Image (cartoon, rainbow, N blue to C red; front, side, top):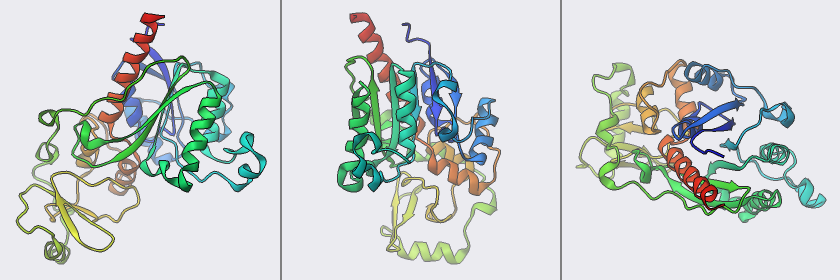
Length: 312
């Protein structure tokens, strides 16, 4: 097969961050699925297709043939029922089950799954072990590693586990971090002349500055307020989160990041269209992936697949 062009499917597609990463190495998306209607609106504005809805209601046989399955799947606990009924039922009722049934029926050459870092520790490590065992039982060679977006060029500390698998015995290594000088500094993603509406009230600003750990920290910085209420400045953003309060991260303790800045923190291009209100952009970027991490992984996967083809 010629891996300069290949077909992929985009499950739990969100706003298409994983899709952007795989399109950048020659992939063509032949099917997408996303449950959240607001995310679908953003996805459609940018990719000119409306994702299919709930994946649990879509038969694997209705999905077009493809070479690579992609998905940033939500992590739910695997049920007690599964533990009682043994291996076959371990993943029932979880969204991982849908990935599993599609892999089983369609047998793509490869997959890439993304999840929160905590997946490895979830339920004492049993959740991750179950996932890995089920993928290997389908005949895939599985690789997994926690990668930090900060190492791949965006100013955001965001650790996520990436799980990669191949049907053939492909030798794969995760991408090396980007050299320091090639990383995008915070000042390069900040907008100038930002509308007053993003600025916080004086009382909030003063309260933040009072609790700031390092009063002489050079600007620009993004500060993060933790659960205990202490405010820590960094030359990068803490992890964007879908459900966090609007003011948990502030730029120079003066204002919230704009919609465009949140997208830039995740490595989306400036050509990416914004079609929903602020709160929804915040949720969507918080749920998304850091695009440069996915690009780097996609690139490594294609290199590995080409090398396998060359040798065999």
